Image (cartoon, rainbow over all chains, first blue to last red):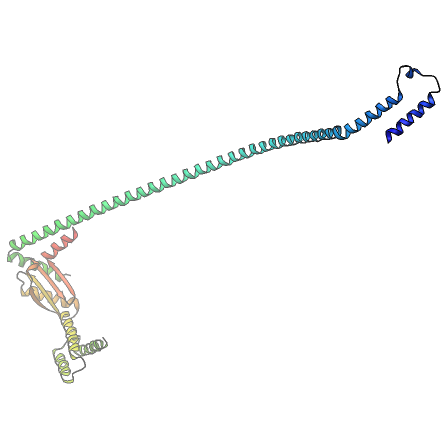
Length: 187
Length: 130
């Protein structure tokens, strides 16, 4: 419809201009109708191509471009986050190392204190047991000496009594009795 | 238990009645025995035993038992009796009892007090001191 109108307008223009002398363009054989027709065809083709191919392709490319930019941006952010995370992890590792060294040092100190304490207690216990054993030995020795002395004294006394019972005469006893009487009366 | 305590008290009272000037009187003891035989108090056997114990203890206080090994002359006994009489402030008589275990020497016992000068005693002291 639109094309028919366009062709009619071109023919009318040609009728108006045909009355005059052919111009340079007519001399080269350029037909305005065909040119116009070609232009319109080109515009229609361009419109179709633009609507169904160029525009979707451009949209797709823009979309991809946005995605690529977004991806790059995301990658940059990730890189920054990774750097931050690495920094944080390094800090954490450093702190953990310091803390672990501190704990290890405290553990070593505690173990050393405990070992010293155990060693000291063992030494004290050994000394105490040695002293007790020494005391027990001394007591046993003294007891043995006392028992020996007592036994020897008992044997000496018993032997002396037996000897005196046999050897003392009545005169000796009478004399001793007189001496005893004097001693007892002077009490 | 209470009966025994009452018997002890009665025996002590009877014992006090048996003393004359701090010494046991034979007449008083006879009188006490006659009284007990006549009146028959409760638990007479317990009373008599306690009374006998009091009298024995009191008599032992006025008697010096001289244990000896060997001969002891009368002069020695008299000397000991006089010495003990003077020491305790009451009349004490001496009696002898042979004890060969003393070996030689004397042991004088007045009541609960013991005085000894004997070979056996000296040997015992020596054995105890070693």
